[in-house]
Image (cartoon, rainbow, N blue to C red):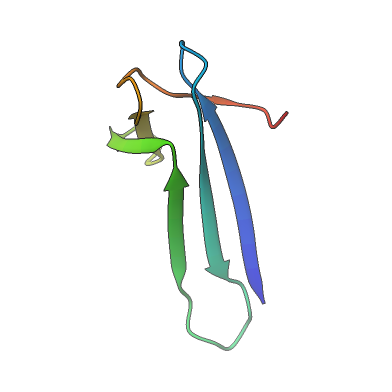
Length: 68
């Protein structure tokens, strides 16, 4: 079965973006992971290894927000 997790982001100008992670969580099968984004551009990683993003529209830093 595929497990999907979502992280939602917003910049200071109100533009929104999302990160969707899909991963195989079945035992006894080969593990895999796929990450797709909308409205985001990669900007390195934070201290915990999570991807940092900037807005694909205006280039401002994206902050993670709770889903609306």
